[in-house]
Image (cartoon, rainbow, N blue to C red):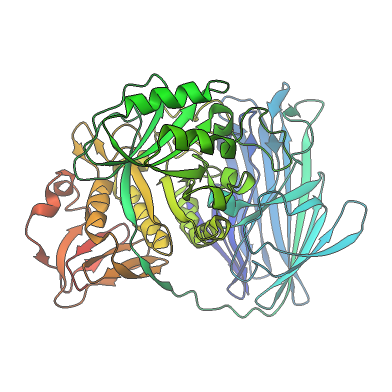
Length: 570
């Protein structure tokens, strides 16, 4: 349930107990205020609303929500109240968390998300816990670590609106969430440098407050679509014996192997990812090379198991051979292949453990949209961050090609815990492998958004695995996202003009794709192709759907999560 709060110049969305898209004069000043409790593996505890009340008047609003963890591990109370003081809008928020027994947590309390528009690169004033004020700037290039520590208050300006934030009850710090493709900077408690996990319990309740003061007059810039020229990258499908052993004809393969894996038969070129046991790197590479002796391995990159996990920029780091130390071993094992550097997990890990572009032929990293949040709005918002992710990646690559791994909604492997979060009920949860949206048009639209952003400089990437939870096929046929991969193969290497936003468009001389997140799009007269909607989705689950004759789509109306695949000259 989502409700709009509108009081004079102030607007916000109330969604599942969180305040989102907080604006003054239409200028977004906070993207989200939430108060999660995260366990020792960084999974987010699911809660249920016990009761809530909202009161709106011409002078302000109040909101109160009582909630509880599903199994009764803790309970909480969130309050928010807006009033006006002269021309200023003042929003006071508080959260209380109590647990009947000591509960190990990595985070409990307020998390503030700051938007990117009008913020990235701008001036920032930070008040520290001792009252001192430091003048900084919001990161422009994506910061690998925390850009701000020891926060008691923040002040800055967004498109004419003065934003002042004061926190009580805990010490806060900030991270650049674009590392995980979140379209935000995040101010959170508790500092990551403090001992984790810690106890939430009878002797350690949480009592925190945040005051947001907004002043000035905002001048909201027109949102519009972001338009750029580029080239459509090669789109591959990821294969891994333990997760997705199937091989599909007609799609390039990214194959991940460990020593001892039985490799599937792959006829075409292979992008190979090797995961090696620490201390047995040369032996593992030799074994994988022997397994792949009959394959056309065109690119290869290797990591040891410890580098499949995340490490803070300041360490501690694994004591064994580094990723760059593996490069000579990989060249010896695969003398005919291009050898890369980078990470198999998120841009976060790539940004913190950067390869030497002078020593490799390409760089790589992957991505998932549900590290921190898994609701539809948050997942769609991640597409906004991709331009900065790819631009920062290209800058760090120093002119070396970007050949990326799997970029999907769901999480392939979890660098922050032993494994992905279980999801037996098929819910929208963070850090899960089996996200329910993979089976429908949502994943297809998401892949179009990733492809559009990648056209700005990515040479290749995978938009799905073959089968399994992240697969483009299932037991009953293909999933809608399969058609995106297949159609994109026909656009590979084509010069493109792409638009991103509520409507995503990829236009090339070979054809084009249009997908819709919000609003409606009317296709122009003369448009021909294939339309994927709620009415045609069942037909699109046949692998050969795009082999059928193109239809006349002139005047067709596309709504949310509809996709049009258009013939040449689109």
